[in-house]
Length: 122
Image (cartoon, rainbow, N blue to C red; front, side, top):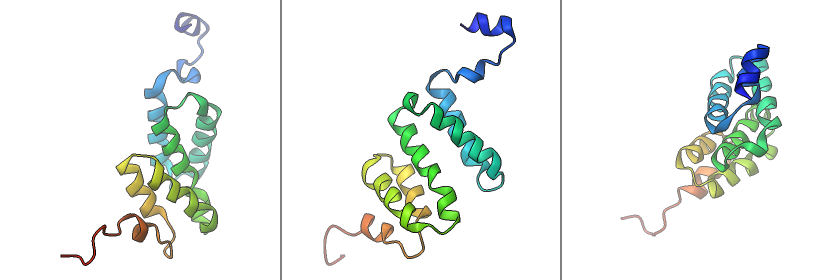
């Protein structure tokens, strides 16, 4: 297939082969927000078209990116449940911290997630 793409002059990136290509697109989307919202939306659309080919970690990352626009618009009723789900179920500490930092100012995400397991605190 790569040979056919090379012969036709088509861009090989159009097929988005393999997990590393998706990781690169997720990183580009992270970098585009909030400075280039048009590019950000274009990258999200591209990722959503291939969502079934993303691995589990990449799908969680995409869900986090999906919260950016609604959060910027103040729609925390939509965003906070998604962020809680990322924190509780993604299994990715880095992504969980990013999700906690993305919640609303009135969100109890950090309180719930980082609550001590023993009382009183020594």
